Every structure is written in structure tokens, then in C-alpha cells.
Amino acid sequence: MKSGIHPQYFQATVTCACGNSFVVGSTKQSISLDICSNCHPFFTGEMRFVDTLGRVEKFVRRQAMGQAQSGVVSKKQKKLLDKKREEEEEAKRPRSLKEMLDRVKAKA
Image (tube, rainbow, N blue to C red):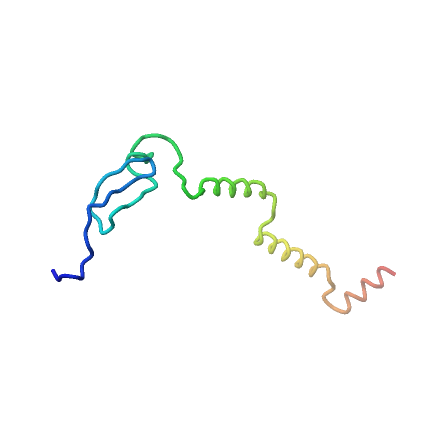
């Protein structure tokens, strides 16, 4: 191996937020974790949420907003309704000058 181009290798101390620490080999001297095998729900068997960035609360808020807006018409549905309304108006319009004159005579 060439000298001077490889990073220095340390016995790094890994420290978890729960207080657990262990030693591994790394190019850093210390590593900090939010969750480790000592406190992760998969390894401990506990049923709890592990949420460091508020993702669960964000999801719950979005889900509540979606349920509140269930009566709101989406853009796609609105376009379909507008198109249907235009087609109905088009059907009511006279197609020719003769039809228009006949309607005017019928009203008078």
C-alpha cells in the first residue's frame, strides 16, 4: 500500500442517544447515533414509534387534513364538471340561423 494516501484508521467509540456505547473500527474517532440495537424497537420487541424528525406527527396532520377535505372537489373532477356543463350549454344553443329565428318567433 502507498503511504500517505490512505485515511487514518481509529478504534472509534460509537455512542447512542440511549447511553449505550461500543467500539468499532472507523476513520472517525467518535460516532454518535440516534438509535442503536440496544434501543431499536425491532431488537427490543417494544411497540413504540421512533421518530426524530416529527414524521409521524406530520403524517397524522396530513391524514386529518385529507379527511376534512373529503367533500372538496379535485381539479380533475372540476375539469370534468366544467366540460359537461359546456356540452350541455352547447346542446341548448341554436345550430343555425333558421333555428334561432324559429325560437324567437315561438317566444313572441
